[in-house]
Length: 181
Image 1 (tube, rainbow, N blue to C red):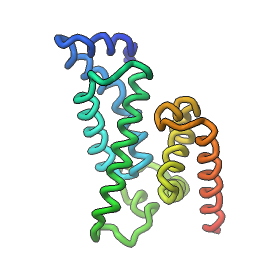
Image 2 (tube, rainbow, N blue to C red):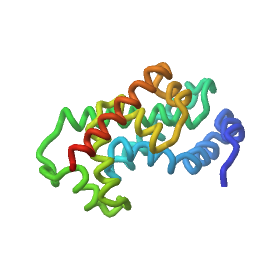
Image 3 (spheres, rainbow, N blue to C red):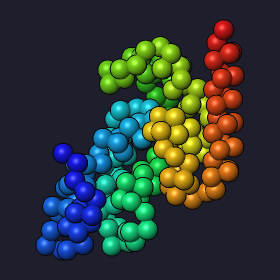
C-alpha cells in the first residue's frame, strides 16, 4: 500500500515517530531504488549493498532534507551518487575476479536474479559501456521512464544537456547492436 509522502515526512519530522517514518520510507522506496541501482551496477549483490548504503546515508542526513524535491528524488540522488562511487572504487581496486573474461551479457545470463533474455543482457552490456553520465541519463529515461525535468533535479544539470546525453547514448547503443551483426 502506497503511503502519501506528506505522511512520511510528518513522521520523519518528529523524533518520537522518526523510526516509524523511516521504516515506511524504506518499505515504499526500496524496490524502485533497487532497480535504479541495479541498472547502473548490474549485479544483484552489489545493488543490495548500495541500496543499504543509500538508506544508511539517508537516515544519517534526514535533518538535511530541505523538502525542495520529493523524497524519491532525494533518495534517487543519493542512490545515484552511491552507485557511481561504487563503480569508481571497483574500477580503482579491480583485481582478478571470478567471471573475468566473460562478457557482461554472459555474466547476466548466468545470474539467477536476472530474468531477461539474451537481447536484454546485450542491452545491459551496451549500457554498461556508456560513459557514466550517459549511462545514468539513459537508465533513468529508458528504464525508469523519468521525465527530463526529474532527471535534471537528480543530476543537477540542464534538460538540454540531458537530452544531448540521451541522444548520444541511444546512438552508441544502436551502433553496439549493429556491431553484433
